[in-house]
Length: 126
Image 1 (cartoon, rainbow, N blue to C red):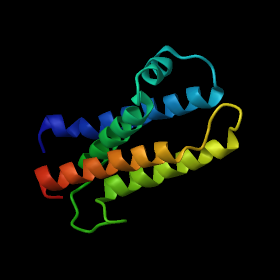
Image 2 (tube, helix red, strand yellow):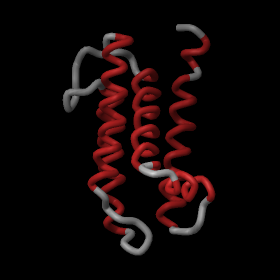
Image 3 (cartoon, rainbow, N blue to C red):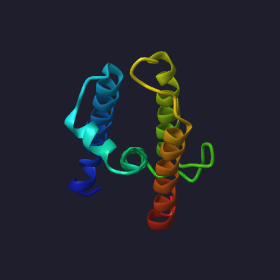
Image 4 (tube, rainbow, N blue to C red):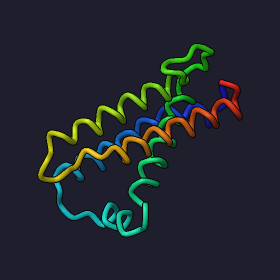
């Protein structure tokens, strides 16, 4: 394994931490330049969801040994990220004053994960 591939699990952990930071800041409901900037772009929130979860799924998948076995029709890394994304969207039910359970966000999350799975299949045959 080349040294650059050894950094992928570390990148996955840091990127997951970044997503957790976004979730916590959003749950708190306060102003945030990054989040407010993304929301100011038409469909920025949806593209943000799709992009964040596509990158996370790619990083997690690359961090794991390639497997032919599929989970929910996805490589293991993508399936783990999909479950996390859907649970996070469902958790918004418990923050009614600052968050809103949105099926479009969940679909964007799923779209990002499936985009990563498609890319993994196409490029790495995983």
